[in-house]
Image (cartoon, rainbow, N blue to C red; front, side):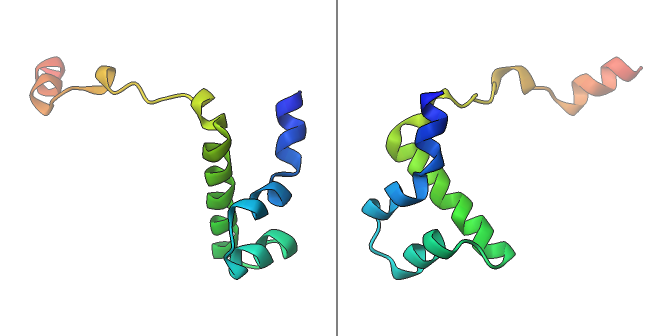
Length: 77
């Protein structure tokens, strides 16, 4: 629950990490276009990385997705 409370004011907290005027304006006024929304999302992701909150995100399991077309063809015969 505490994590959700901290994330509600992430915009105010992120202002301490940036001096870019465009980012400040975006954080204060919000996104006005699709691309600004994407940029705002990237700022949120960067804030989560700075705070260490991204370590709980699930990681892709690369080992189980290995196969080849030859194996697929053998199964189809």
